[in-house]
Image (cartoon, rainbow, N blue to C red; front, top):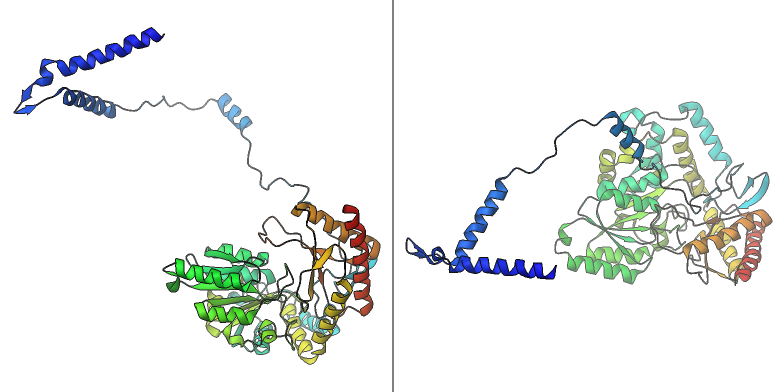
Length: 483
């Protein structure tokens, strides 16, 4: 084998040498000396042109036989419509058998409810029920059309005017679903090429709005103003076109994934320094923060006109459904033409708009509700201050009391299992209903998981003491066993 290769190599070398030494290789044509290398190059060029001119081989076409078609069909495996369900995805939450008030029924048993964001205790309020009943008798249940196509009813306009007057803004717009407010409002203003600086702890509704906007998204550390300023400075300096683009800061007033309150006064200063716009979601702070419940702007003493866009869901403090966006008349008018959740969805059922108006009336007439809520939050904080194995991660004035493991297991899955065990035993043994911050596969929030307690102004002192003592007892039992 080796000798044959040597013979072939020697033969090739001899042929090339002959080509260079041949008389025609040293010929002079029209005064040009044709060397051996030029001769070889010409030959190669001719070969290449010949090969390029040849038609590529194509197998003869013929129709498939019935047998071949059957075999292909038998071998084909279609893609699944949904991803395979893992054990982590399978969840059967408790079913409520009565109104989601401070107490509710689960499996026929009365439990203290800390799983519903009924901050002002308006679920089942007599005035709300009367308002809804009157609206149902007058308008029926649904509107059967989007706002721009004969779905606008006078109570919608009354509700928008009520919200704008309450918050001190020129105009407001109603959405028929709370979560759709954010993922309709953001894409209405933010487009491809725009820059959005957003807190890493925002809820999924905001995340989806960011995704639909197709803008350039940059996250900063959760509620960290140093991180926000560094991010704003970096984006402004590194992107030469940044000052010519639309630029936004997106934050929540009260983060449902941590219970922290955004420092709006500092955010506004940074906004003005780097010339960004602010989109603020007040779903959990509207009706809760501030002396009269007007939200984060009142809480921090920031003029509401300094915030470009404010959104909120009405399913928490107002105990109704739907959402709203408020701001300047230009901001609102733009959404009436370009916001998908407003233009294409059937409008908010009239009785829910009527309930929202009544809820705001109750809040204005009873500012003591805010003080009662703050008092309840403070009492629960005192009761949970020395809980073993868990720490309070939320703001002391936040009605979303967020408990995290002091020592993580190192795995989100294992942390969730521990927390779910605590929640399950609380419900079964102590009749206290709390919720775990378990997130869907779509939710990209990277904050640690925890136990979330929604405090209500309607909770009694006994409810709060029972919750704190039960949590201490169950958490100590479970976490000590694990350690």
